[in-house]
Image 1: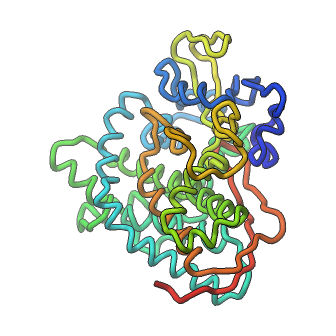
Image 2: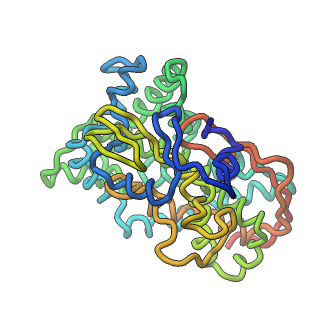
Image 3: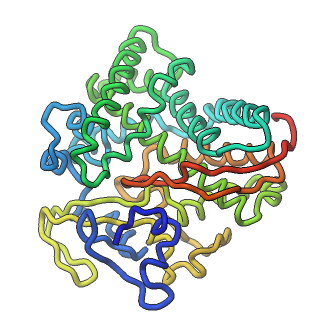
Length: 397
Protein backbone atom coordinates (compact mmCIF):
# COMPACT_ATOMS: atom_id res chain seq x y z
CA UNK A 1 0.00 0.00 0.00
CA UNK A 2 1.42 3.38 -1.04
CA UNK A 3 0.47 5.85 1.69
CA UNK A 4 2.18 8.76 -0.06
CA UNK A 5 -0.27 9.12 -2.95
CA UNK A 6 -2.82 11.90 -3.20
CA UNK A 7 -5.59 9.31 -3.35
CA UNK A 8 -4.58 7.88 0.05
CA UNK A 9 -4.03 11.30 1.67
CA UNK A 10 -7.42 12.59 0.56
CA UNK A 11 -9.35 9.45 1.48
CA UNK A 12 -7.33 7.10 3.70
CA UNK A 13 -10.38 5.18 4.91
CA UNK A 14 -11.16 4.06 1.37
CA UNK A 15 -7.74 2.42 1.19
CA UNK A 16 -7.95 0.99 4.71
CA UNK A 17 -11.19 -0.92 4.19
CA UNK A 18 -13.87 1.30 5.74
CA UNK A 19 -16.73 0.93 6.42
CA UNK A 20 -15.85 -2.74 6.95
CA UNK A 21 -12.86 -4.00 8.96
CA UNK A 22 -10.42 -1.08 8.98
CA UNK A 23 -6.75 -1.99 8.59
CA UNK A 24 -4.88 -1.20 11.82
CA UNK A 25 -1.33 -1.55 10.49
CA UNK A 26 0.61 -2.82 7.49
CA UNK A 27 4.14 -3.26 6.20
CA UNK A 28 5.13 0.07 4.70
CA UNK A 29 8.06 1.95 3.20
CA UNK A 30 9.36 2.85 6.68
CA UNK A 31 8.63 -0.42 8.45
CA UNK A 32 5.29 -1.18 10.07
CA UNK A 33 2.81 1.65 9.46
CA UNK A 34 0.22 2.30 12.20
CA UNK A 35 -3.13 3.89 11.34
CA UNK A 36 -5.21 4.01 14.55
CA UNK A 37 -5.50 7.28 16.46
CA UNK A 38 -5.03 5.88 19.97
CA UNK A 39 -1.97 3.88 18.90
CA UNK A 40 -0.38 6.78 17.05
CA UNK A 41 -1.03 9.17 19.95
CA UNK A 42 0.50 6.73 22.45
CA UNK A 43 3.55 6.09 20.27
CA UNK A 44 4.29 9.81 20.07
CA UNK A 45 5.04 9.72 23.81
CA UNK A 46 6.71 6.30 23.96
CA UNK A 47 10.38 6.70 24.91
CA UNK A 48 11.17 3.27 23.51
CA UNK A 49 11.06 4.71 20.00
CA UNK A 50 12.61 7.86 18.56
CA UNK A 51 12.74 9.69 15.22
CA UNK A 52 15.18 8.56 12.57
CA UNK A 53 18.82 9.48 13.20
CA UNK A 54 21.67 10.50 10.94
CA UNK A 55 22.79 6.87 10.95
CA UNK A 56 19.71 5.92 8.95
CA UNK A 57 20.81 8.36 6.25
CA UNK A 58 24.44 7.22 6.40
CA UNK A 59 23.12 3.76 5.61
CA UNK A 60 21.33 5.25 2.57
CA UNK A 61 24.42 6.92 1.10
CA UNK A 62 24.90 10.20 2.99
CA UNK A 63 28.52 10.85 4.00
CA UNK A 64 29.76 12.21 7.32
CA UNK A 65 30.56 15.91 7.16
CA UNK A 66 28.21 16.47 4.22
CA UNK A 67 25.56 19.21 4.38
CA UNK A 68 22.82 16.63 4.96
CA UNK A 69 24.75 15.01 7.81
CA UNK A 70 25.52 18.35 9.47
CA UNK A 71 21.89 19.42 9.14
CA UNK A 72 20.61 16.21 10.73
CA UNK A 73 23.16 16.27 13.56
CA UNK A 74 23.14 19.97 14.42
CA UNK A 75 19.85 21.50 13.34
CA UNK A 76 17.07 19.01 12.68
CA UNK A 77 15.23 18.78 16.00
CA UNK A 78 13.47 15.62 14.91
CA UNK A 79 16.66 13.68 14.21
CA UNK A 80 19.61 15.16 16.13
CA UNK A 81 21.13 13.20 19.06
CA UNK A 82 18.78 13.18 22.05
CA UNK A 83 21.21 14.96 24.39
CA UNK A 84 21.60 17.83 21.91
CA UNK A 85 17.83 17.98 21.38
CA UNK A 86 17.24 18.23 25.13
CA UNK A 87 19.86 20.99 25.45
CA UNK A 88 18.93 23.09 22.41
CA UNK A 89 15.14 22.77 22.23
CA UNK A 90 14.47 24.90 25.37
CA UNK A 91 16.73 27.63 23.98
CA UNK A 92 14.96 27.70 20.62
CA UNK A 93 11.56 27.67 22.33
CA UNK A 94 12.47 30.87 24.16
CA UNK A 95 12.68 32.55 20.76
CA UNK A 96 9.06 31.51 20.08
CA UNK A 97 7.69 33.06 23.26
CA UNK A 98 4.06 34.22 22.97
CA UNK A 99 4.93 37.91 23.32
CA UNK A 100 7.20 37.80 20.25
CA UNK A 101 4.54 35.95 18.24
CA UNK A 102 1.95 38.61 19.17
CA UNK A 103 4.42 41.28 18.09
CA UNK A 104 4.73 39.55 14.69
CA UNK A 105 0.97 39.46 14.02
CA UNK A 106 0.70 42.96 12.43
CA UNK A 107 3.51 42.03 10.02
CA UNK A 108 1.72 38.77 9.12
CA UNK A 109 -1.44 40.76 8.42
CA UNK A 110 0.50 43.20 6.25
CA UNK A 111 2.07 40.37 4.25
CA UNK A 112 -1.30 38.67 3.78
CA UNK A 113 -3.00 41.89 2.66
CA UNK A 114 -0.20 42.62 0.20
CA UNK A 115 -0.56 39.19 -1.36
CA UNK A 116 -4.34 39.52 -1.65
CA UNK A 117 -3.85 42.96 -3.23
CA UNK A 118 -1.76 41.27 -5.93
CA UNK A 119 -4.33 38.49 -6.39
CA UNK A 120 -7.15 41.02 -6.86
CA UNK A 121 -5.07 43.10 -9.26
CA UNK A 122 -4.26 40.07 -11.40
CA UNK A 123 -7.92 39.29 -12.09
CA UNK A 124 -10.62 36.91 -10.94
CA UNK A 125 -8.57 33.72 -10.73
CA UNK A 126 -5.68 32.57 -8.55
CA UNK A 127 -3.75 29.52 -7.40
CA UNK A 128 -3.97 29.79 -3.62
CA UNK A 129 -0.63 27.99 -3.23
CA UNK A 130 1.59 29.70 -5.80
CA UNK A 131 -0.07 33.10 -5.34
CA UNK A 132 -0.69 33.09 -1.59
CA UNK A 133 0.30 30.35 0.84
CA UNK A 134 3.78 29.79 -0.61
CA UNK A 135 4.72 33.43 -0.12
CA UNK A 136 2.85 34.02 3.14
CA UNK A 137 4.58 31.14 4.89
CA UNK A 138 8.16 31.88 3.78
CA UNK A 139 7.82 35.64 4.30
CA UNK A 140 6.33 35.13 7.77
CA UNK A 141 8.99 32.76 9.09
CA UNK A 142 11.71 34.86 7.46
CA UNK A 143 10.43 38.08 9.04
CA UNK A 144 10.12 36.39 12.42
CA UNK A 145 13.66 35.04 12.30
CA UNK A 146 15.13 38.31 11.10
CA UNK A 147 15.70 37.86 7.37
CA UNK A 148 15.40 41.15 5.45
CA UNK A 149 12.39 41.04 3.11
CA UNK A 150 14.57 41.79 0.09
CA UNK A 151 16.63 38.63 0.72
CA UNK A 152 13.79 36.08 0.83
CA UNK A 153 13.89 35.44 -2.91
CA UNK A 154 17.45 34.13 -2.55
CA UNK A 155 16.33 30.88 -0.92
CA UNK A 156 12.51 30.60 -1.01
CA UNK A 157 12.55 27.86 -3.64
CA UNK A 158 15.20 25.88 -1.75
CA UNK A 159 13.14 25.86 1.44
CA UNK A 160 10.50 23.54 -0.04
CA UNK A 161 13.04 20.74 -0.44
CA UNK A 162 12.64 19.35 3.11
CA UNK A 163 10.22 16.84 1.61
CA UNK A 164 13.24 15.08 0.06
CA UNK A 165 14.24 13.70 3.46
CA UNK A 166 11.38 11.24 3.02
CA UNK A 167 12.11 10.35 -0.59
CA UNK A 168 12.07 6.63 -1.45
CA UNK A 169 14.55 5.73 -2.86
CA UNK A 170 16.64 8.36 -1.13
CA UNK A 171 19.97 8.25 -2.99
CA UNK A 172 18.73 10.06 -6.14
CA UNK A 173 17.52 12.95 -3.96
CA UNK A 174 20.90 13.54 -2.27
CA UNK A 175 22.40 16.03 -4.78
CA UNK A 176 19.26 18.16 -4.89
CA UNK A 177 18.86 18.22 -1.11
CA UNK A 178 22.53 19.03 -0.55
CA UNK A 179 22.35 21.89 -3.04
CA UNK A 180 19.37 23.36 -1.17
CA UNK A 181 21.04 23.00 2.23
CA UNK A 182 24.26 24.65 1.04
CA UNK A 183 22.30 27.53 -0.47
CA UNK A 184 20.29 28.20 2.70
CA UNK A 185 23.05 27.56 5.26
CA UNK A 186 25.53 29.84 3.45
CA UNK A 187 23.04 32.68 3.57
CA UNK A 188 22.05 32.03 7.21
CA UNK A 189 25.69 31.88 8.32
CA UNK A 190 26.31 35.33 6.85
CA UNK A 191 23.13 36.68 8.48
CA UNK A 192 24.04 35.31 11.94
CA UNK A 193 27.52 36.80 11.62
CA UNK A 194 26.00 40.19 10.73
CA UNK A 195 23.60 40.04 13.70
CA UNK A 196 26.51 39.43 16.07
CA UNK A 197 27.88 42.80 14.96
CA UNK A 198 24.54 44.61 14.72
CA UNK A 199 21.73 42.96 16.71
CA UNK A 200 18.09 43.56 15.78
CA UNK A 201 14.69 42.98 17.34
CA UNK A 202 14.35 39.45 15.99
CA UNK A 203 14.66 35.75 16.71
CA UNK A 204 18.32 35.47 15.70
CA UNK A 205 19.34 38.33 17.98
CA UNK A 206 17.38 36.78 20.85
CA UNK A 207 19.34 33.55 20.54
CA UNK A 208 22.68 35.33 20.23
CA UNK A 209 21.83 37.22 23.42
CA UNK A 210 21.34 33.93 25.26
CA UNK A 211 25.03 33.18 24.76
CA UNK A 212 25.96 36.19 26.84
CA UNK A 213 23.72 34.81 29.60
CA UNK A 214 25.74 31.60 29.71
CA UNK A 215 23.62 29.35 27.51
CA UNK A 216 25.76 27.36 25.11
CA UNK A 217 24.86 27.26 21.43
CA UNK A 218 27.61 27.20 18.83
CA UNK A 219 27.62 29.14 15.56
CA UNK A 220 27.09 25.87 13.67
CA UNK A 221 24.18 24.84 15.89
CA UNK A 222 22.58 28.26 15.56
CA UNK A 223 22.97 28.29 11.77
CA UNK A 224 21.62 24.76 11.24
CA UNK A 225 18.76 25.33 13.71
CA UNK A 226 17.66 28.37 11.73
CA UNK A 227 17.97 26.41 8.47
CA UNK A 228 15.64 23.81 9.99
CA UNK A 229 13.12 26.45 11.07
CA UNK A 230 13.10 27.98 7.58
CA UNK A 231 12.61 24.58 5.96
CA UNK A 232 10.04 23.24 8.40
CA UNK A 233 8.29 26.59 8.80
CA UNK A 234 7.78 27.04 5.07
CA UNK A 235 6.72 23.77 3.46
CA UNK A 236 4.38 22.49 6.16
CA UNK A 237 2.63 25.80 6.71
CA UNK A 238 2.19 26.60 3.01
CA UNK A 239 0.34 23.30 2.67
CA UNK A 240 -1.75 23.75 5.83
CA UNK A 241 -2.83 27.27 4.86
CA UNK A 242 -4.02 25.95 1.50
CA UNK A 243 -5.78 22.94 3.03
CA UNK A 244 -7.56 25.11 5.60
CA UNK A 245 -8.75 27.49 2.88
CA UNK A 246 -9.84 24.48 0.82
CA UNK A 247 -11.99 23.13 3.67
CA UNK A 248 -13.49 26.56 4.28
CA UNK A 249 -14.53 26.86 0.64
CA UNK A 250 -15.63 23.26 0.03
CA UNK A 251 -17.79 23.06 3.17
CA UNK A 252 -19.56 26.36 2.56
CA UNK A 253 -18.23 27.94 5.77
CA UNK A 254 -16.85 31.06 4.07
CA UNK A 255 -19.78 33.37 4.75
CA UNK A 256 -20.05 32.20 8.36
CA UNK A 257 -16.32 32.94 8.84
CA UNK A 258 -16.89 36.46 7.51
CA UNK A 259 -19.35 37.03 10.38
CA UNK A 260 -17.46 35.09 13.08
CA UNK A 261 -13.70 35.58 13.16
CA UNK A 262 -13.25 32.70 15.62
CA UNK A 263 -14.46 30.12 13.10
CA UNK A 264 -11.17 29.88 11.15
CA UNK A 265 -9.25 28.94 14.28
CA UNK A 266 -11.85 26.23 15.02
CA UNK A 267 -11.61 25.03 11.43
CA UNK A 268 -7.81 24.78 11.67
CA UNK A 269 -8.08 21.90 14.12
CA UNK A 270 -10.27 20.00 11.66
CA UNK A 271 -7.90 20.91 8.82
CA UNK A 272 -4.98 19.40 10.76
CA UNK A 273 -7.07 16.27 11.36
CA UNK A 274 -8.40 15.80 7.83
CA UNK A 275 -5.51 17.15 5.74
CA UNK A 276 -2.33 17.12 7.88
CA UNK A 277 0.65 18.60 6.02
CA UNK A 278 3.05 16.55 8.16
CA UNK A 279 1.25 13.29 7.53
CA UNK A 280 3.81 10.61 8.47
CA UNK A 281 6.37 10.34 11.26
CA UNK A 282 8.95 7.54 10.77
CA UNK A 283 10.44 6.14 13.98
CA UNK A 284 13.28 3.83 15.04
CA UNK A 285 12.87 1.37 17.92
CA UNK A 286 15.27 1.88 20.84
CA UNK A 287 14.04 -0.80 23.26
CA UNK A 288 11.94 -3.94 22.86
CA UNK A 289 8.22 -3.20 22.71
CA UNK A 290 4.93 -4.68 21.61
CA UNK A 291 2.33 -2.70 19.70
CA UNK A 292 -1.03 -4.11 18.62
CA UNK A 293 0.28 -7.64 19.14
CA UNK A 294 3.44 -7.05 17.08
CA UNK A 295 6.88 -7.38 18.68
CA UNK A 296 9.70 -4.98 17.83
CA UNK A 297 13.42 -5.04 18.65
CA UNK A 298 15.99 -2.22 18.75
CA UNK A 299 16.75 -1.02 15.25
CA UNK A 300 13.36 -1.97 13.83
CA UNK A 301 11.50 0.80 12.05
CA UNK A 302 7.88 1.89 12.13
CA UNK A 303 5.80 4.91 11.14
CA UNK A 304 2.97 6.91 12.67
CA UNK A 305 0.42 7.78 10.00
CA UNK A 306 -1.44 10.96 10.92
CA UNK A 307 -3.43 11.09 7.70
CA UNK A 308 -5.12 7.84 8.73
CA UNK A 309 -5.16 8.46 12.49
CA UNK A 310 -7.19 11.64 12.07
CA UNK A 311 -9.87 9.74 10.16
CA UNK A 312 -10.17 6.86 12.67
CA UNK A 313 -13.93 6.17 12.85
CA UNK A 314 -13.60 4.49 16.24
CA UNK A 315 -12.55 7.85 17.69
CA UNK A 316 -14.07 10.48 15.39
CA UNK A 317 -17.73 10.18 14.43
CA UNK A 318 -18.25 10.93 10.73
CA UNK A 319 -14.46 11.18 10.34
CA UNK A 320 -14.49 12.61 6.81
CA UNK A 321 -16.78 15.51 7.79
CA UNK A 322 -15.86 18.88 9.25
CA UNK A 323 -17.32 19.10 12.76
CA UNK A 324 -16.28 22.27 14.55
CA UNK A 325 -17.59 21.28 17.97
CA UNK A 326 -16.08 17.81 18.38
CA UNK A 327 -16.03 16.83 22.06
CA UNK A 328 -12.84 17.39 24.03
CA UNK A 329 -10.05 16.47 23.90
CA UNK A 330 -10.63 16.02 20.18
CA UNK A 331 -7.67 15.80 17.84
CA UNK A 332 -4.52 16.47 19.88
CA UNK A 333 -1.70 15.49 17.56
CA UNK A 334 -1.98 18.00 14.71
CA UNK A 335 1.31 19.63 15.64
CA UNK A 336 2.89 16.42 16.90
CA UNK A 337 2.75 15.34 20.52
CA UNK A 338 5.03 14.91 23.50
CA UNK A 339 8.72 15.80 23.36
CA UNK A 340 8.65 16.42 19.61
CA UNK A 341 5.65 18.76 19.56
CA UNK A 342 6.19 21.36 16.82
CA UNK A 343 8.49 24.13 18.07
CA UNK A 344 6.81 26.79 15.95
CA UNK A 345 3.18 25.77 16.44
CA UNK A 346 2.22 29.15 17.90
CA UNK A 347 3.59 31.10 14.95
CA UNK A 348 2.10 28.61 12.48
CA UNK A 349 -1.32 28.96 14.12
CA UNK A 350 -1.10 32.74 13.89
CA UNK A 351 -0.16 32.83 10.21
CA UNK A 352 -2.70 30.19 9.15
CA UNK A 353 -5.59 31.89 10.95
CA UNK A 354 -4.58 35.41 9.88
CA UNK A 355 -3.92 34.28 6.32
CA UNK A 356 -7.18 32.40 5.83
CA UNK A 357 -9.21 35.09 7.61
CA UNK A 358 -7.73 37.66 5.24
CA UNK A 359 -8.92 35.61 2.27
CA UNK A 360 -12.38 35.52 3.87
CA UNK A 361 -12.42 39.25 4.52
CA UNK A 362 -11.11 40.29 1.10
CA UNK A 363 -12.63 37.82 -1.37
CA UNK A 364 -16.19 36.68 -2.05
CA UNK A 365 -17.93 34.33 -4.51
CA UNK A 366 -14.96 32.01 -4.11
CA UNK A 367 -15.10 28.63 -5.85
CA UNK A 368 -12.50 25.94 -6.43
CA UNK A 369 -12.08 25.22 -10.14
CA UNK A 370 -10.42 22.19 -11.66
CA UNK A 371 -8.66 19.46 -9.76
CA UNK A 372 -6.70 20.03 -6.59
CA UNK A 373 -3.19 18.71 -7.28
CA UNK A 374 -0.91 17.57 -4.46
CA UNK A 375 2.84 17.62 -4.02
CA UNK A 376 3.69 14.23 -2.53
CA UNK A 377 6.66 11.94 -2.05
CA UNK A 378 7.86 12.39 1.53
CA UNK A 379 6.53 13.00 5.01
CA UNK A 380 5.11 16.41 4.03
CA UNK A 381 2.30 16.70 1.49
CA UNK A 382 -0.47 19.04 0.49
CA UNK A 383 -1.93 21.07 -2.35
CA UNK A 384 0.41 22.42 -4.98
CA UNK A 385 -2.38 23.57 -7.26
CA UNK A 386 -5.56 24.99 -5.70
CA UNK A 387 -7.16 27.16 -8.35
CA UNK A 388 -10.05 29.46 -7.44
CA UNK A 389 -12.31 32.04 -9.00
CA UNK A 390 -13.44 35.00 -6.90
CA UNK A 391 -14.73 38.55 -6.69
CA UNK A 392 -13.14 41.23 -4.48
CA UNK A 393 -15.04 41.90 -1.28
CA UNK A 394 -13.49 45.03 0.32
CA UNK A 395 -10.26 46.99 0.49
CA UNK A 396 -7.52 45.95 2.91
CA UNK A 397 -8.29 46.52 6.58
